Amino acid sequence: MIFEYQTGKVGCVSAGMDRSEVRRLLGKFEEFRKSPDSINTTDDFADAAAHVYYDNHDHVVGVEVHRESGLFYRGLSVMEKTPEQIESSLSTLSVECDRSDSSMISIEGGKVGMYLMEDNGGVDVVVSVYVDLSET
Image (cartoon, rainbow, N blue to C red; front, side, top):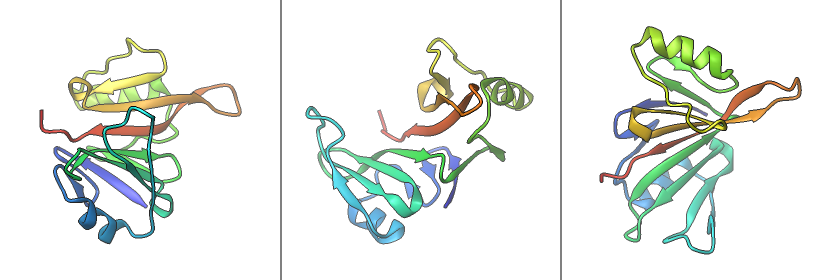
């Protein structure tokens, strides 16, 4: 599945959307607890290669898209790109990147985090993107 980021939305999943609506839209899921301290469970949509996070009222607060899917940011495909490719492309869109964490590229004031992992050739590439859709 290909996702496109827009403010307040990742693909068909919008900030504050109810869990039942997300499940209806994305289909088959497995519910799990991301960590023992998680406020609520997370839904894993394997066919969409995405995790959706919820608040304690079952409203969407975040979406994580994995590399098996695609994610576009302002028309730019970000998965499997190197940090240099991302930074170069985003600079043409006048988007500032924060690289203070060597394993992540952060944009939009930390609302969008692109996680890096070494590929088989020993090069860091984007393997997942987390979009914070919380309204705080």
